[in-house]
Image 1: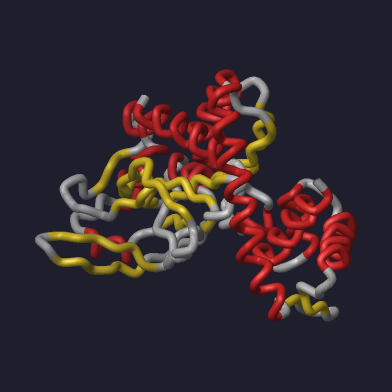
Image 2: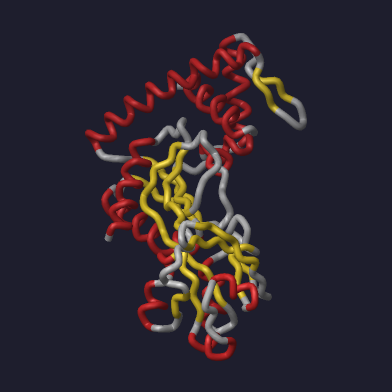
Length: 293
């Protein structure tokens, strides 16, 4: 068991890049991680890591040992998954999600998952920053938007269409833009989570174009941006998953309904080396059912 704990700690250090991040992933102190790796090196009689005050790197032996350790842990994971399937899920699952979406759809899915699997502790962490799964110790994350990291396991759950909206009070005071290009002459509220909050993309008649926008209010949350939008302070482009109530009650009006702004995928992501894939898959299944209503 000590050898196995050493393997898990060693692999976690390599994949997260530090003893601190490895400890966060494993739920133990960085000192214990360091102790386990040192004991592993002593037991097998070889150094696995080059350590300096600023960096960690694998020794030649460490590269070879890493491959074998991952194989052993993968086989153990498969065995545990078989028992999980037979006896019910246990343990902890850590889920990362964006704040606004996490407070609604993801939170409901997490609650349903907890009801179905009472022996699993669910920890939901909400942030509009893209958390590093390995360093943050997360089992799975829900993301809205395109991903650049090809090393992650991705499952598309659905998508959300962006809509341009404004309050009737704003349109009464400033006029209604007739074409997306007119937005450059209006006050716009910008979500800094966007790859380029200063340019909004549109597609009309097979052509994609961008419109420069500006305004005095920026936030890194759709929910925060909707507050001044409802108050008539500007025009906002927002994922439609957050707009049902506002459009249904008339608090907000959709502009350019026949123009395609763009759509964003809603995806679950996790590391290939996740040790709790049965729990991850079970949660993602619940999440997808929640999205379908």
